[in-house]
Amino acid sequence: MRGRLWLVDRDVEPGRWGPEPVGHAGLDPRTREFARTRLGPAVSAPLPGRSAVSVSRLGSEQLAELFPGIEVATDEDTRSRASRGMSYVNMVSWRSGREQRAPDAVVFPASHEEALTVVQACSKANIACVPLGGGTSVTGGIDTPDVAAVIAVSTDRMNAIEDFDEESAVVTVGAGITGPELETFLGERGWTLGHFPQSYERASIGGYIAARSSGQSSSGYGRIEDMLVSADVATPIGSWTVGGYPASSSGPDLRQVVLGSEGSLGVITRAQLRVKRAPTVREYRAALIPGDFDAAVRVVQDLTRSPLRPTVLRVSDPAETEALLTMSMPSGLVGRAFSAYVRARRALPGSLIIVGFESDREATLRASRAFTSDVLAEAGAVSLGARPGNSWVTGRFHGPYLRDALLDEGYLVETFETVVLWSHVVDLHRELSDTARRELGDNSYVMAHISHSYDVGASLYFTVLAGGWEDPDAAVTAWQRVKSQIMDVLSDSGAAVSHHHGVGRDHREWLAAQIGGVGLGVLRSMKNYLDPAGVMNPGVLIDGDGRTRR
Ligand SMILES: Cc1cc2nc3c(=O)[nH]c(=O)nc-3n(C[C@H](O)[C@H](O)[C@H](O)COP(=O)(O)OP(=O)(O)OC[C@H]3O[C@@H](n4cnc5c(N)ncnc54)[C@H](O)[C@@H]3O)c2cc1C
Image 1: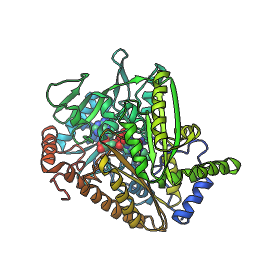
Image 2: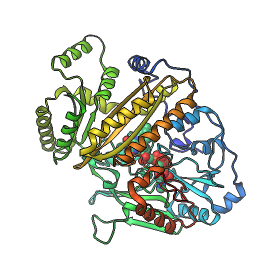
Image 3: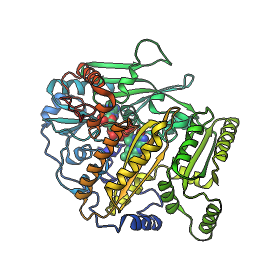
Image 4: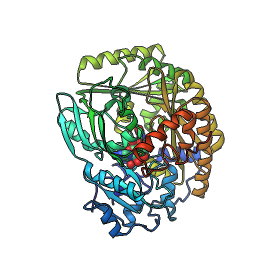
């Protein structure tokens, strides 16, 4: 058996994003030097490998009876690959070699009807079902729950493009299709979905919907919820279709119940998505906004609030700017000329801003570029031209490979993110940076950017790097303590538990502070109705007994 996705991709070791993209084998010398000076020397860390998994508790006869005619795998390798997502803690656990909990089987329904058979059989037999797309969850969304029997329901075989209504600009796809598969189909016809999260190479459409994902071009194309026209869901009580209209005032919008449901209500099997004309003109530029992060935040706010905003809008805080410039600075004469240019204009310390313009009309691109240039000029930004913008586009999916290389050298690499109203963005950025730096100590580097912004606020996306651990378990324990403090800060400051990574199992304890007791009750009653036996991804979003932190 051979599948298309990470789950059954035998070429990639679990605990690694993938084989290196061309020209990216290991750490390049500048990044290695940056890591060594800021995080301490590399240590000999365990490399990716197979961690042993618990023995399957479901026999082949029982599985054949439960899921007649449906593909099922019980081999250790496939179950191990389906056992957890891709958070730092997950990656280290894969590399530890210790025995881990794993699903008792991985089931591969090939249609909505087969998915319905699977979830209904599980509901009757009281077997937990974890819906599984690309397996890129970083919030424990697919980590095998600690219950009597568990299967992972892979959407790998539901990846067909079922219909393309070009006049309405709506494509209908199986939920297991990946971004690259869909973009190839659409690109050949002059269209695009425009959804490019950093996990694009592996994540599935069903996963995007279930975790309310947001892509790097969200300023231009919106988030996944802006793209979702309708979804079919296989639930324990039957088939459910939500949406299907351009807009409607027929009561509450039930698409919003499926978006962000994280597998807790059923398996999303099919989706209709709004697509856009593919851009025929593209331009990406970079600039430095001198001063502290406040100045850059004001620029993003001004740009975002205009209909002429760029398609890609991303600003790094001064720490991320320093890291990016250090790691990508050209060597020799070009590097020295660049440093002299930036110094002469007093651009540093400052914030690196990337703006991307994409359109199917030259005039639209020109208008957006002129507006953006005006706002940047008013803020005293120093243009860096097209080259850094273009290299951001070329490297936009390289981050996870860099993480592999840093993990190989024993460094802690993790991200966390949130979203808050503009009036709190600067203070929250400061508080989260201070908390992470203080708690992780001298051998750490904490940096952030804004890449998703709205009329009323913006997300803050942090990357933390830390070194100095001979023992990866000590790093995991330290990170779990720091993450818990970070989540407390988010709760106390009115920021969301997550902007696009989702809640999963890792953030569940803090959800109550965001949505309140009544909100939790609403979630619980929806789950009780659609999943009366409580078999759908138990432990994500809400605990079975409603346990919450506050
Ligand atoms: C390196 C890296 C970079 C990332 N960058 C981004 C980013 O830029 N933007 C962003 O939004 N996210 C990002 N993520 C997070 C992750 O990729 C997203 O949450 C994505 O939406 C998950 O898709 P998936 O197919 O991998 O889902 P999975 O990881 O397989 O599942 C995620 C959750 O959705 C549920 N689920 C999956 N498929 C279905 C289905 N068909 N029906 C019902 N439930 C389902 C699962 O049970 C689980 O709860 C990143 C993750 C990594 C590891």
